[in-house]
Length: 115
Length: 115
Image (cartoon, rainbow over all chains, first blue to last red):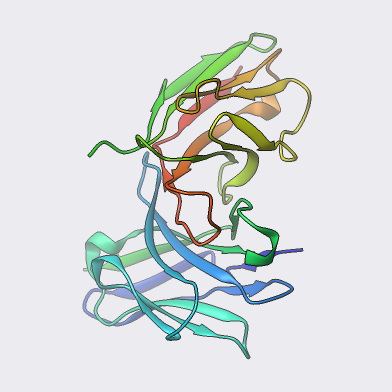
């Protein structure tokens, strides 16, 4: 079965500092991995995805994520946090061998960037 | 271009009432997913359509939940005889194709409160 773990419910970081939001996954084969962001009263917005190739994936708003197969992780990173990055972040996984299945989401991590 | 839209944005229903939630996917998107998001949780899969065909309804929590997409575009999620445990945000997502690597685009959701 596919699963995603986001071990931190809350991450606090000072504006201008680097941020990391952690995600680990479990699938039977090679995963497809996604990050989404959710602002209050809005739907999820796609940030980036890992399908294959380069382990470092760059996405929207200056975010990037690194796929680490040995650690089964896909941590979201940004070199310099902005107050406007404060939101709820979700990691999601899909096992491509199962076809166009629904995404399996983690519980989410609330990021607070403090000015 | 327009994104995924959902209506109503908020719905209050008395226990036992029937409700219908509408999703307008991005034009031309083949795949459509419904998710349920409880407070403080990540979205959980309900059902999946490829065009007008409902290929997976394994996530529907009971036979009170019913979804349709008769012309392969707009979809409606219907909940009969609502219960308090149905209170949640219902998210609709669409993707361009039917490939597992396609990212999903989410609507703003419908917040259902059952009193």
